[in-house]
Structures are given as structure tokens and as C-alpha cells.
Image 1 (cartoon, one colour):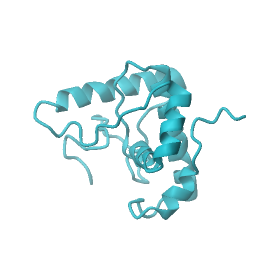
Image 2 (cartoon, rainbow, N blue to C red; image 1 turned 30 degrees about the horizontal axis):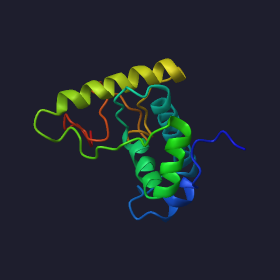
Image 3 (tube, helix red, strand yellow; image 1 turned 45 degrees about the horizontal axis):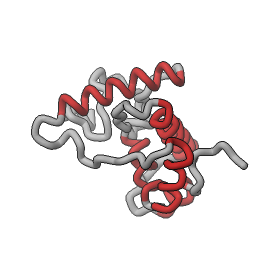
Image 4 (cartoon, rainbow, N blue to C red; image 1 turned 180 degrees about the vertical axis):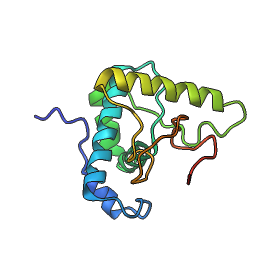
Length: 147
């Protein structure tokens, strides 16, 4: 028996996906999958917290959900519930402050749990170091993408 919380081969799913970002190295794919695994475990550790994924984590979350039997089983086994995903949250009227707070909370819990920054160059989908002080979630709410 394994303690691995994710039972499906998400690297294979990433490679087969039409939505996978182009140009990611094998190292970036593995690192992003590990970040998703940690996010998944963070959700299990803090069941009442509203967590906001980074772009790279969200990609693997979507891939995991595309295997509904495995996703359901993994969620039940790891956290005793199905982790819901509210895609597009933050775009609705009045939701942006909630998204910003959720992201800030996620960033704090991540740093406490793993002793490292939540946002990095892989999370932002760029090979350049991230120096954006806004720390966006999977949607760039302050319109600085591409800088």
C-alpha cells in the first residue's frame, strides 16, 4: 500500500492533453505535479481553508478531475471529501477580494507547511524569475501578465 495521494499518472495525462502549456521541460512538469500533490495535501490538512491554486497547480488539478473515478477516490482517501473546484472564481462581481484573500491564505499556509514561497517561475508559466508583488492566482487580476 502506498501513501501517494494521487493514483493516476498525471504526467502521462499532461503529455496527452491538448491544453498542456507548450515548452515545459520534463523538470518543470515534474515540479508542477509535485506542487499539485502538495496543494492536494494542504487541502487535506486544512479542510476549512479556501485555497486558491497557481496556474501550474490548476493545470494538474484539472487533469486529475478528468479522471473522475480516481479523483473521487483520491479525495475520499486523502481528505474524506471531494475537493470542489470553482473554476473562474474571482471573475464574478464582488469576488475579487475573496479570491485575493484565499490566495493570500494559501500562500501563508504553503509557507508554513513547506517552508518555501508559493509562487515561483514555474507557477507563473515563465522561465524568468517572478518579481511580481501581486502574487496572482490562476487569473492575473492586476493585468500585468506578459511583463
